[in-house]
Image (cartoon, rainbow, N blue to C red; front, side, top):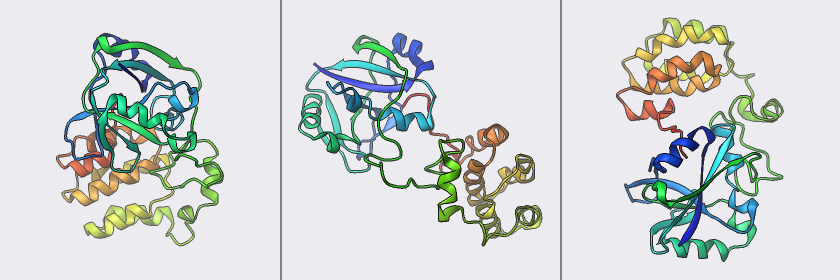
Length: 264
């Protein structure tokens, strides 16, 4: 039997203990079956929970580690994140991890193309202090990407990182009020998308001046709005994003974060 660890928000612990882990993630392979990501339970604590620090950036501030056992011949995939994974058995996936050096092991992951039953779960523990890498494996010494997709508002030292990034050089952009005034009057979809991209600096009250675009007939406008809302105050944008998560088009729903589930 092979041991693995899956990380989930701590608030899910009672449900997971009662009903198991639901298959809510998609593999990077061609396999359409949903499943979940995990890592082998290793002797090295840091490498076992290496993903916890990065996951904490996007999910619940408190994480729980779910330890489970599955048969050695269970079909899984293994590989470095971002690369095409290789189909192997659970035992082979563990062996693959053990064959790597600690540096090579960072960023490796296993995908189980099914859920985990409550009977297969052996332990659920709270991670008091997430560890591991942030942004990307072996990122120490490299400046993190400052774009909104990689660096969320409120993160550690975000102001200093953005001040050094050319992405946030707004000297070439028109003033915020000018952009908002144009958004209120223009009817050209392409121009609206361009204006939304220029809306880098947003006040909390500005949310009401772009809310009407959530009902725009052009899906490109609604998608651009969903991405632009990432720069607004989260509480102020929550209701509008929730509306966009129910959009008929998948691209708009994904831009609004419709695929963000409680499990990981």
